[in-house]
Length: 134
Image 1 (cartoon, one colour):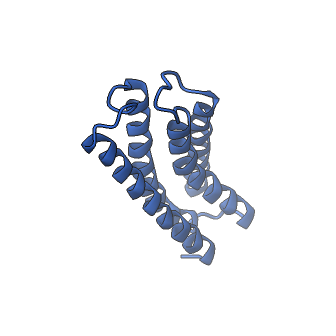
Image 2 (cartoon, one colour):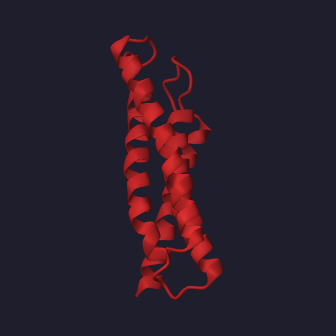
C-alpha cells in the first residue's frame, strides 16, 4: 500500500470517531426524548440518514482505497480518485445534519446540496477507479 493511500485511510479512520459521536448524539436524543428530534420527523429522518450514510460510506471507501494502488493511473489521477472517494463520506452526512440544524426546522436548508455533492464525488471517484482497474 502506498504512503498516500495509507495516509488517506488513516484520515478516514479518524472520522470514525465523528461517526461514533453522531450515533451517541442520536441515542441521547432518543433516550432523553429531546423535543425537536422525536417530534420532528424531517430532522429525525435526515439525521438518521446522515449517521447511516457516514458509517456505510466510510467502510466502502476503506475497502476501495487499496485498489487505487493497483491501477496503472498516474499519480495525479490516483490522488484525484482518493480525494473524490473520501469526499463522499464527509460531504453526504454533513449535508444531512447541517440541513436541519434547529429543532424547529421542518424543511432542509440549502446545505442539503452537500449530499448531492458527496454523492457525485463518490460516484465519479468510483467510476474513475473502476475504469482505471480495467
